[in-house]
Image (cartoon, rainbow, N blue to C red; front, side):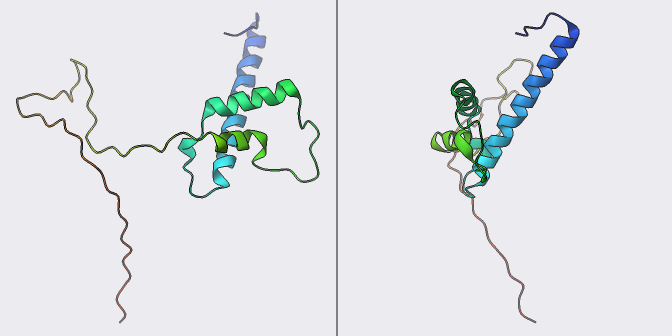
Length: 128
C-alpha cells in the first residue's frame, strides 16, 4: 500500500520501491557470484530484504572503510540461508484446468515421473 496522497508522491514512492528492489537483486547476484558453484536462483529475496531492513534499523556499518566488501552483511546472510537446489523437470508441464489446450485425454495417460540424469560429453576433434 502506498502512503502518498498525491500523484507526484505516489510516483516517487514507486520509484523508491523499484530502486530498492533492484539494489536487493544486485546484492543477491553479487553474493552468489562470489562462489562459482552456487546458482543465483538459490538466493532468497526474503532473507535479503530482512537483512537490509535490519541494517537500516541498526544503522550498523554506516561509514564504509577504505576496502568495500562486495558480499557485505546482506550477502553473508544470503549465503548462510540458501534455498535448496531446483529439481529437474522430467515430465511435460500439465495444466490442470478444464479449458486448457494441454489437457490430457484418453485412458492411457502417463503421469509417472522419472529420475533425470544430466551428462556432459566434451568431444575433441581427431588429429589430422
